[in-house]
Length: 220
Image (cartoon, rainbow, N blue to C red; front, top):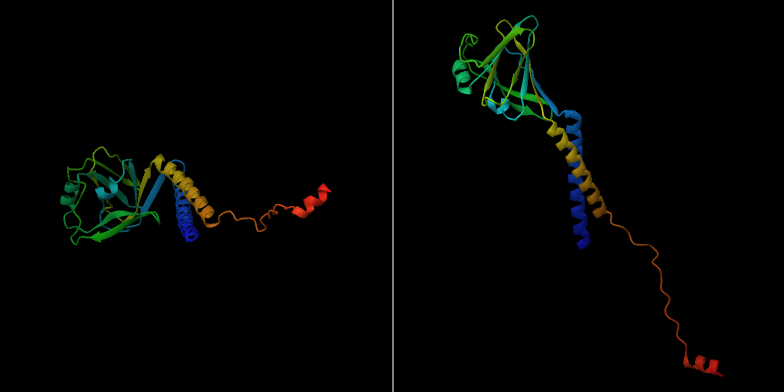
């Protein structure tokens, strides 16, 4: 019974170690030594794109947002207090970036609102704004969190949005996960396949006994 329990525990340890090792290697290769994660989405919408604080201020590191319009179109991007951004957009049609999908390294989105989008650049509530022909990049620090970021293309579509975050600790944590996984895997394997005893155990010859008759013959 003890042997059975030991083997079951060993199998569980080995499976947990294997899963942790694979996950750690996958993250380490994906993040690189500088711990850079990049998530993208293709809204391809003629409506503004809103990135809420739940995504923008989810980590302590700076978030670099890069948006690309359709070919030949201009792009506008700005950040503001979340309540101000919501008030300006109102019930306007928009694409909201709601989170990240780590498995596919994608931004998750949803479309909401029914009214025509307003002219956003004229409002005086934006803390920082930038525009240009082609891709526009804006770095969001966490000093003024929480914040929302709004992206719009007046004469085209918002073709893609990319969020880039770097934290070297993520790479270190991935390597640590690999080491712990390998340790658990080794421990599980040892528990499942314990050292076998020798198939031919040594036999101990019984101590020889001398019969009284033999002793008597020796004396003679």
